[in-house]
Structure formats: C-alpha cells, structure tokens
Length: 305
Image (cartoon, rainbow, N blue to C red; front, side, top):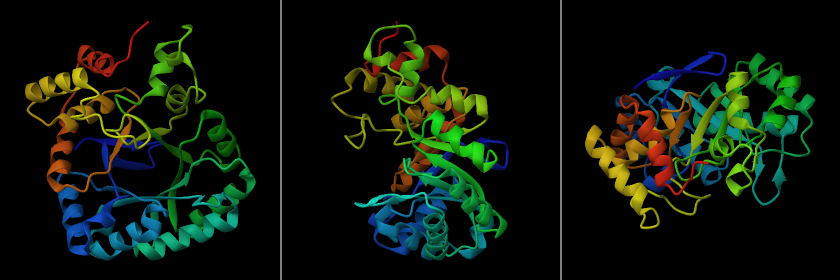
C-alpha cells in the first residue's frame, strides 16, 4: 500500500482508508475485529469514524473490537459537529464534549485526526481555535480537518486556527465529481462549468490540504453505486475491460481513478466485505494512463469541451 503525507506532512497515511459508518451491521465485535485485521493485513491502517455513525455505536463496537496492542499501528479519524435533527454545532463546548465522548467510545487516549463534519454557518472561528488548542495541548488530538467545506470556509478557519486544517473530506467518484467538472469546463456556459465550491480542488492543492474522497462508488448522494449498475453501461464496460487488463476488480479500478489524480487524494472506502476490501487495496498498485483516466471520465456520461 502506497503512503501519502497528509497536509503539512504531520501524518503519513495509506492511500486508502476504511470508512466505519456501517460496521455495526456486522453484528458482533468478532466480525468487526476480522474486518479490521483484513484491512491492516492489506496495508489499510487508517480508520474513519464520526460521532453520528449509528448514533455513536460504530465507535463503540470499534473500540470493543480493537486489540489495544494494535493502537500505535493505527490511524484513527473521527468527526463532530452534526446534532441530528437539531443543528450543526461548532461551539467550543460541543467540540470539546464530542472529542471526549469519542475518546471514551473508541477506548483510546488520543485521536489522530479530528474533523468538523459539515459547515456550521453560526460558527465562531475564535471558539473553534480555542477548542483545537485545548485538545492539542491536552494530547487528545494530534491533527485537525474538516468535511464538506468550501475554500472560503477553510480559509476563515485557518486564519484563526493557525493553519491547523490539513484535511477536507469531500464526496468524489467517477460519476460524482463536480469539483473536476467545473475545472474542465471553465469559460463554457453549461451546468458542468458551474463552480459550486469555490475551486476547492485547486485551493486544497495550493494550500497543502489533503482531500479525502468519500463514497467513491456512488453516483449521487446515497442514490446508489455505479459499479454493475445498468444506469452506467458504458462505464461498466470500460471498468471491466481495465479490470481484466490490470487483473483486479472493477471497484479497484474505480478507486485507482481517484488515486491517479496528482492532488494525491486519499480514498475512504466503506465496505464491510472482507474480500472486497482485499480487492480494493490493489488499487494502490495501479497507475492508470492519462488516456484511461479520461476515457473513464467520459464513459460516466461526461463531455469534454
């Protein structure tokens, strides 16, 4: 598994991380432990959580499943800021309380990466900075990031937080890549050219902020996966062709498409299937050609100007 440096190089991580949103569906700590072991056996020692995943139960079962002797070999990331059905909350009080609650559920003394989950328009960045400083000083959090934020929102936070934001987790796949579409359709009057996020791809590259891609197999926000979907016949034909060429699965090709981008994007995959995780890990061994990358992009229904 190839490694990349997050943000300013504070952490070295695998190109592929395991998303833990659905691990409670495995039903037992034994099954979760086996999934963790499979991931780590294939070089995936990065685990992505959030306090809202299964209302905290995902963190709990992960904490129960992890052998304490493995903790130093792991990189654990979690998020806070969403209060389901109520509001978003980036107040100092909520951030500190959320971090403590996640630490308790995960049964760990520290969190490697702590992300703010979705933007809070009532955010007071001075409070966020105070919370981050407190967590860092107490040794509870090593590094910080955000999820689903645009360039201006990150710039505002980093102005007060001393450039502590080193990660931005964003939805990205072959079939859902607005941040790429807008960059390819500059000065073109079409929907693909609409810049919805303040040029976040280029901004993160300029600022040394690592993009983490979530839902790398989705074609909409939880609408469904494009792999083996009859809605994407041309894309699946090409995925199969390339899978046969590189002797990997179609899922691995879909992840390799993200990894091929020079922004050095880390991909978070949320499968709970051990064999699928093993298969996807092979994406790190593949470097698609420029021609293959663009062919996949257009096979997803995109057009180049």
